[in-house]
Length: 319
Ligand SMILES: Cc1cc2nc3c(=O)[nH]c(=O)nc-3n(C[C@H](O)[C@H](O)[C@H](O)COP(=O)(O)OP(=O)(O)OC[C@H]3O[C@@H](n4cnc5c(N)ncnc54)[C@H](O)[C@@H]3O)c2cc1C
Image 1: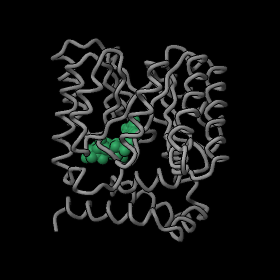
Image 2: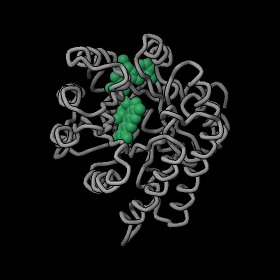
Image 3: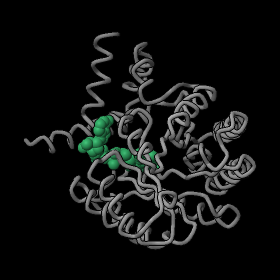
Image 4: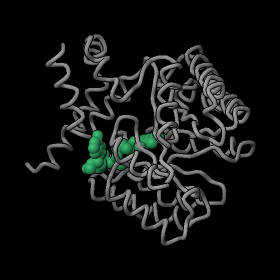
């Protein structure tokens, strides 16, 4: 078995495992989990996220902040998530971090009600609208995270509706989906902020490329469309090859440094994040915070065996 095969097996296994309630409760209760999780999630409270954003701003990095939580089937929970975003935006504004979009927020529609039976999409739209109004007041922007492929059409529909009032709302497109190159063409219009990532969910062959090579090739095709277009590409990847290709494409299209940005996750390749910011390009760090770190952490584990080893070593040595 090759290394690539082994990591693919690990990835599928971890994404499968992440659905087990039993495994979840063991990992969540392990006392050391908290300290190990800290590498990827700065804390539970609004203040933890604001502090992390301030620290990153001090080193020239922009941020986008995600209040962790997804897939809620409970209206009160969806409202609480909306309220957490409103409190976050107000705290970021008080800390002077929102001007010019220095710190913005990333929102998962499933966390604000998209899956609620009946009116889910409408409720998520209303909650997202309230978050956008608060962001506008604070002088910053919102990006709608993209979740599994069953939600893509609904999320893009909500995006279109929000953009009528808030044209700066950012979209996320996932290069592993077959449809994404076409979606990039649709969204590469003036003023359109589009985050391109590889995609983090377990998706079937019928809708998504399965091998790393095919996903990477799709990423480059999508990047070419976005960089050649009129919009504002947000290059979300830790992959050194893709980061380099993004830079070359930006140069080819004479893009100014403020007409696109790189994005990476909190705690991943921090030295590279600094290097990109120091050379004068825009680097935005995605900061997740909150109690609901489990699903987020499992996706990071599935992506990279080294992340899993880091976590398991922590459990073994400090537990
Ligand atoms: C800002 C941001 C927002 C995102 N939003 C979404 C979203 O809304 N929806 C969604 O489905 N997914 C999202 N993702 C996750 C994304 O889809 C990928 O799952 C994740 O970024 C891993 O893919 P990668 O491009 O980094 O490449 P990978 O194929 O995971 O890694 C490629 C290479 O990057 C380097 N690398 C990766 N991780 C590390 C590490 N820990 N340390 C050192 N080097 C490393 C290695 O050289 C590795 O070979 C987001 C990612 C980012 C960065």
